[in-house]
Image (cartoon, rainbow, N blue to C red; front, side, top):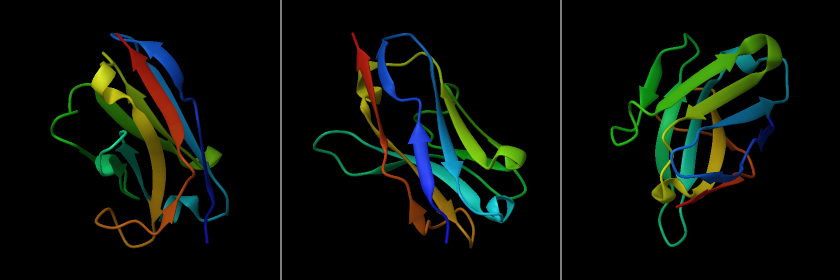
Length: 118
């Protein structure tokens, strides 16, 4: 079992940058693949990025180039850095963990709101 707590959300102007953090409980953080998802108002949740246990990274095609996912196993934390933010990036961003890999995720955080103003 792992518990996830996101932080770093807030209001940012278009063109700005924002780094989200996700702190995980437990001693086996390094054994989990981690991911970020988002859900905009009225839309389904969508994949943003993932990082495997071996630190291979995967990005949503539409976001590639503006996004970096990283992890610090010593701090049990995964990060999501996004640059050149656009109003359409406004969403609740969720952190997720998977014991099996990056194809499906078993554990979810509560989410953190990111609002990008134009």
